[in-house]
Amino acid sequence: MTYEVGSRYPNPGDKVRIVEKKNYTSGKLTEGIVKDVLTRQQTHPRGHKVRLTTGIIGRIQEFTDENQNRLPADGEETSNTLYTLGEDDLA
Image (cartoon, rainbow, N blue to C red; front, side, top):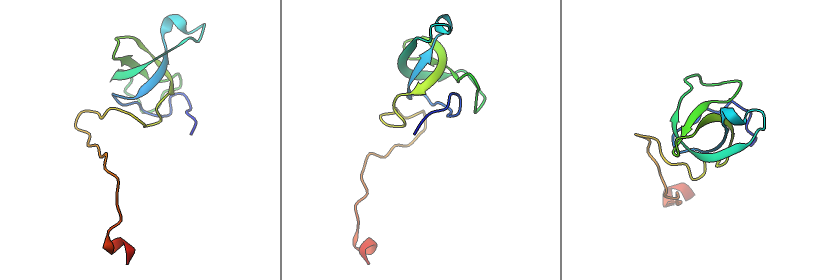
């Protein structure tokens, strides 16, 4: 799955690569984990602005996890159990 900049709304815990304002011209990306989402819009043409857990602020250019290994957001339920077939499923 490819990511089009600004199309996927980030959540706290997502692993991303961002571009800081000082690196807009060079395009240098910084990788980190989203702490806060600073853009309220669901989509954004230049990428959602986020604060990483390190305190760095920038615009998301790509997601590195594609929903794998994402930390759960506040109040979000997670399930790490695999579904196993029961007798009812086999009938």
